[in-house]
Image (cartoon, rainbow over all chains, first blue to last red; front, side, top):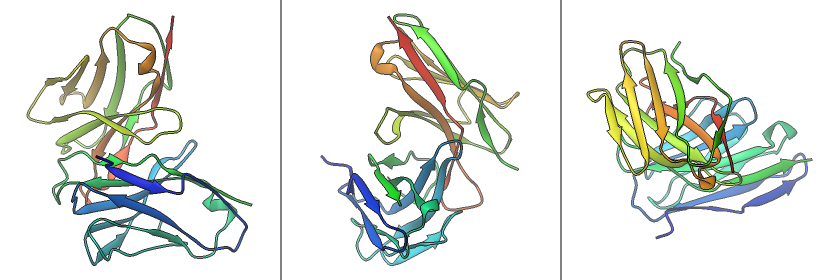
Length: 114
Length: 113
């Protein structure tokens, strides 16, 4: 049972490059989300999805794009990487729409932008 | 505004002792709280949750206490082990967005032999 799988685990980019961070889950969870974690800032929500075909912005969406074509996958795209996007990115899922359930996290992608 | 925060940034505990990690929240309407453990290089791992209709909930070696009067919750770890060394977060779902988790800053627990 893999749970939430994120790839790659590490990535170094140059400013201006684009890339896609992958997130896949095998729990059939409807809700998926992307957070970034920075020292002193905690975990901040970038984008989320309540089901296939439905996405919405979180609190720090600028510079990122998402799509949800299947229940299992929720990729995060950096359109033109900037040093401010150096961070650790976590994907999280939850079983249903109701907020009173825990979210389950992947082990993250550590991204450095030079 | 709504916030979830932690009192102590670092907690040093001797192996075998009990650990207590505290968390304060500001929204009196909050009705669900989650504790996560994050080890170095890994994602947050769900430990235990509690709903506002409960004062206490126990898991394996962990107990969460909720005091709604003073808007405070705590995580107690019994017989702390080296594997308990990690950062612990309390979190609550925000009521103004779909399931966004509001995290506290985290407490680093260091277990000493």
